[in-house]
Structure formats: structure tokens, C-alpha cells
Length: 354
Image (cartoon, rainbow, N blue to C red; front, side, top):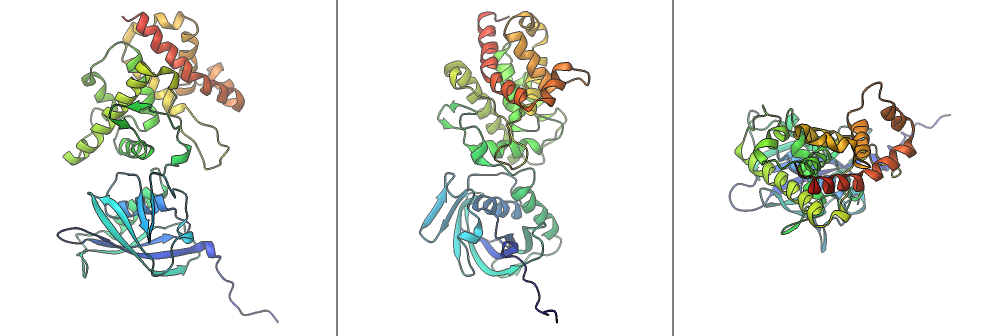
């Protein structure tokens, strides 16, 4: 006789029910959020931001008991290892410079974690819910999911440690790169990733001198309209920081220059991809008109440009592009050679400045 006992849902399908309240003066907005137990501390931080409508991804700063996780610490630590019902934690400077007090109020097992995190409720004060027309649960959930595991997800440990070099007054952190990537993806018709922007800046800094007024329209897509002046105030400094750091690296420490590549998938063995960087570089070249033409006939700079074009803007019948696509080893070696190749192009223009 078969057993009537129900099969238990695996423990890794557990979710936590969290009560999140913004601290500080004035009203205390709150959210009730359900998150997967396998969500990492960094993803929890971003999910909370998304639930409150904040689109920027910042470096996580979370304190649980006497342990503080910040500056990359605990980026991959799953919540199941550090949280249980009744646990209280603080997320520092999470929304508009305010801290968030978080309490784990329940835990349950679900059949699928696919649609988590979920925003289950919210309000403008500790005891009052917002009217339906002022708080959209569905939109808040979408924003939280997007921030947690959508296009905005960035594996900080896989980003090149010297991708942007050093910048005056400090470094452009991996979290800032993630925020820049997020901001660019929200711009319609412009440069859509931090990697592409890095390639774009590498080209325009290497080639003929251009004022920001000449290249900013290409970053913003020309017709893009910002809904809020605060968006401009947040995005523009990040863009200029990226420009300054690429320029400073090429000018002062070219031996440390590296492409800001991307990775596809989550496998640890996944090779860096340079398509976005190369597309950005090709776009930057297009702003230099005929100044790049003589370089194409030089060695090895001409071959570097040919490789960048093959990876970034391949034609269907491009033999080199097809060869790179068919041979992963050749592709990886080519990408590795592009960093010193880009520095050679920069040096060529310093000697042969139009």
C-alpha cells in the first residue's frame, strides 16, 4: 500500500517574508517582500532598492547582528546561511541615503522560486497602506525582480579588477560599474552597456580630440528624454567618471589598460566576451571621420582595427568574423590581444595626431 505522506518540497525552494522599513526623519515607508533563501546578500540589497522604485545598483552594506557585510564582503552569501525567522538586519544608505530596517517575519517553502522576489505590500507609514492608485504592487515586484536577477544582475567578482584603471580622487568601483551599466540600459537608443561605453571612450580618447558636446549625443541616443532631472544628475557624473578613468589610464598607466569585457551565462569557465566593447569602439571610430584611414595601413594597428571590426560589427560574409565565431580558442586569444592593441593605437595617434 502506497504512502499517503506528501512529498516535501526541497529546502532550496524556501522563501523568506521580510518587513522592510526606511529609517530616518519624517514618514517611514515600508515594504513587505518575499525573497528566495538562495538570494545573495547583494541581490537582497538590490531587490529592496527595486521594491522602493530605485533603479540604481549601489554597493551593498548590510549589518546582521555584529557582522557587517560591505565592500564586496558576502556578495555571494545566500540568505539561508545567515537568516532565520526573527532575524533583524540593517541595510545602510539603501534609498536616498536612508537606512532600511529589515525583519524576517516568516519562512515557507514554495514549489517554484521563478517569480521571486515578490512585493506583497507597502505603505507610507508603519501602520498605513498606500491607496491602490499610489502603490502598484505589480510594478514594484517587477522592479525588484529586474534588480535582483534580470538584466541588472552583475557578478562583481567576474568584472576585471582594473577595467577602468584609477581615477582622480579614487577608484570607479565594481558597484559603480554596475550602476553605470544599469543606467545605460534604461536609455533608449544610446550606448546600452558599460562595456560598450568603455570601448567607445577608448576610441574617442585615442583618436582626434573631441569635445563632450560631440560625443554625448551618441551616449544618450540623441532623442532620449529623461523623466526626472535627478536621473541626469545621477547618470552624467558616472559617465564623466568613466571617461576620466579611461583617459587617465591611457595617458598615465597604459600598461595597466584592459578591456571591460562581459560574460555570458553563469559558468565559471565562460570566456570573456568583447562584442559590446568592440561595437562601442567602432562607434567611437566613426566620430573621427577620415583620421583613422592612414592607421588602417599600418602594422600592427591596422590588424587590431580589423579584429575589432570583425568582433564588433561583422558582415555576414566576413571570413575573419566567421573564423573567430567558429574557434573559441582563437576568439579568446584575439580578445586578450585587443588590450595591448588598443594601447598601440592610442600611441600611434599621440605621434601622428591629425
